[in-house]
Amino acid sequence: MADEDLELDHLFAQAQRQRPTLPDDLAVRIQTDAETVRLGRLAPAPQPMPSIWNRLISNVGGWQGLGGLVAASAAGVWIGFSAPAFLPDPANLLTSEETPFLVADLGFDSSFLESTE
Image (cartoon, rainbow, N blue to C red; front, side):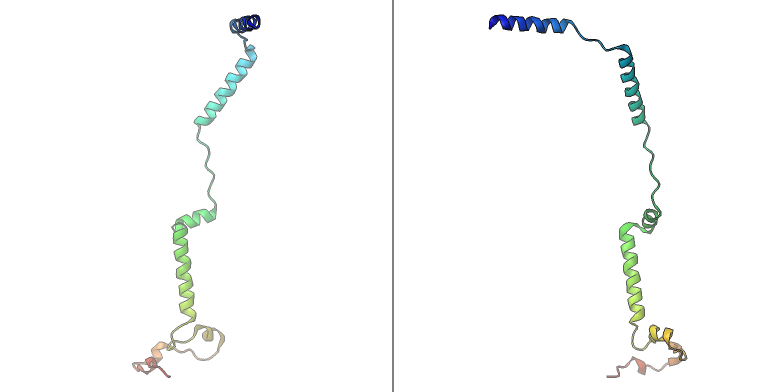
């Protein structure tokens, strides 16, 4: 067994002395590829143009601003269609052909504010 160890040590020592060399064309190709990768990392990546929806949302104030705009719009529609009792119903104004009722026609009479119940 000691002879096998000595022979193995001799083979390792011989392998350390005989270093393999790269062929010249392979070394040039490796260096060229490494330089191409290095130069590609130095240049900033082009930023894609944001879509029109992304630009619109960012101009409104982001998702928070868009959420506030939707909430205010929904509240306006709800208030518009559930108007107080003393104001005319906008849905009836759109569908009926009666003479329009104006708040200015009420004059200074405040009896319309009283409940009819």
